[in-house]
Length: 531
Image (cartoon, rainbow, N blue to C red; front, side, top):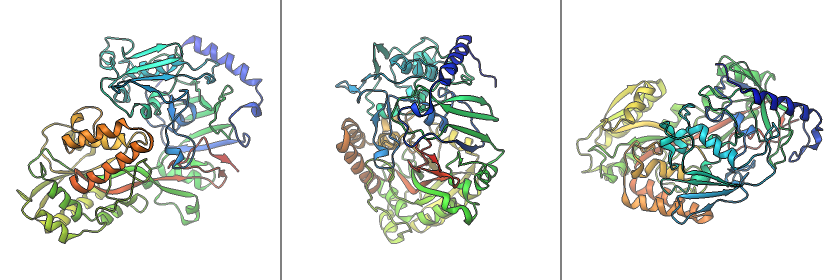
């Protein structure tokens, strides 16, 4: 893949490099503790350095600025949404569909170009352009005019307007999570003239954060260097970040073990199960925001309008055994939809970690209907073993489970196809940003079923819950989180639309020379320093 470059950008970069050469390292604002050395990262893949094209790359946490962000601080402070380039929280219209952000001055791209309201408008243009074919377009699909732009009928969504230093965004429906959404990489500010390409823009790639992409060759080399114009408050302790590419996860982990890398760019627990006890003190494991679940399909006769049976299943499931089958680092048993890393979470201890067969039988009596259930799982050994546990758990309460093992893509295609006949499915879920809206609304708002904004695979729909979701989303600060926390507990205890059996872990593995450790819950690279 050869990135396309525009001749004027080459000239800008030559100018920027000349300017940068005259800037003393110690003069950069926002740094605490001095700049020292090169932080080495081992990885197996970086698909793109362009935030309009790529998903979830750590590079964006170092190079991007956003309207809103989450601070480089441990929880709970690191979970509180705060303005970054926006001068304050946005002004929201009474109907909740229009957001107005005032852009503060002082942020500059590594080319020397200022960050303006147009920088964010163009970021939206690039994601929604049909030329880009961006995987992130769903995160902007409720912007007025987004669908017209995706269809090639416009060059900017009509709902995005720039008025001086103000960015105005109109949505098709009230979505109070929109400020939190702007903290994600698709909303990363980009220069107003940055080209749009399905291949993404190559290196050097301008960053307005503490670093920019100085060099990139796909699956070969990636180097981030200091943005000489950065004057923001984010920490940035090292001179540069160098990514080295390895053939597989084991090789990437071994690079940190033998000291040739400082961090593995992968926080999936299974990556680290074979680490020697010698290095375990440098393995940092924290609960993440992801959950492992058993979807209960409320659109099929077995669980439709049958909350009592859904609750019976929740009592019958062996959460401890299901969690252990995923691996020793994967997570801890859980029974709620929000996790301890998310604002609003409150421990409720609703269902047991081990089966309460007596309670499950009591609830299931007279509610098992056909007594037959089809369970979809991926055709992986761990999921098939989990399916067998579920099968054994539900037999005593009168449900005979038929296991259907499918390749992952085929299973999800079926789950997202309306009318597919299944009763249960083993599925993981994790929010894109740490806000309860992106869990409870995404999972349980029945009005969103079938849209890009829904992961409601169980087709759960309740007018009462929809009203409470709306009410919670309209609140702010502590009241908002309290409302979502109460709703989470009530959903799990009384409606049981799906069974949560585990809270997934996030794992960070670092070398002995890495200090200034902040976990959010994965390692905050901007905050890290070298000893």
